[in-house]
Length: 350
Image 1 (cartoon, one colour):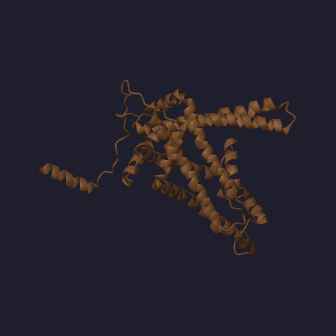
Image 2 (tube, rainbow, N blue to C red; image 1 turned 90 degrees about the vertical axis):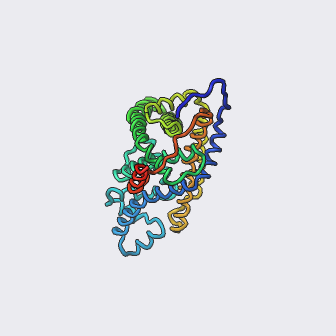
Image 3 (cartoon, helix red, strand yellow; image 1 turned 120 degrees about the vertical axis):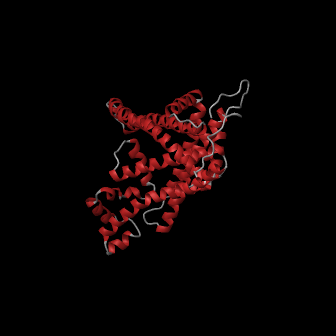
């Protein structure tokens, strides 16, 4: 329920560092959520991996090259495969090895490179999955205690349609950034500012500065969307327009601490990526070792994501929560039709 703080009651201001640390604590205290997210991501990626594997097996066949390719990168064969690959097969390049895939994804995102249709479909499915799980995850972190599986998925179902409407609005903002701001920054401004530059270092500095401007715009949209979700869950809001407006006001009134928490979470993610850069398996690493290292990296990436969500909840609750300020009521799955029919007969008999 939504209500205003009682008159004369003052609460200490929440700190970005405190919310950051408490967010990681709540993320670590929810192992079922972490394992569930990892399992969902694995099941999403599995069909694509199996489809790509069948393409590779069909192209290689029983040969000496197949045996060498099973234990390391075979550049000659990879070039031959890429020349005839279609659809998902075009994603099988040297960039998928180790840290190269991470750099390729980040670079392609900021350069607004179109995704292959299959990968774009997987990205949409990934976004829908997070929209569905976000309601249950935020509700779990807002309560700061374990909840039953039925209650978790009930919250996911309740907020899915609300977050889907919110996703359309936030998605429109992202579309505007990539459709208008990105061409202006990396087209008009880039051409005007680099027309008289003669050194590659100065051109790189301009490019990096434009990347920072675009990243700030993306971060602002992300912040507003994330706090809109937090307010929708903690306050049980049904109007996503109202949640967006409330999120904008929340960010506008405490910008330094809000962005401070966001930067702390971004630094944590950068540290995870930096560790991945050091530990990423090479093309000649054994398959079990490469698989294990990749799963450890994904685990820390999921923890970083969950810690940010929990930190945003903690910060919001620390700023506006008070004695009469509660989260949504505990969601429960309804009884089966048979059980409900028996209950109705009993109530009528009384």
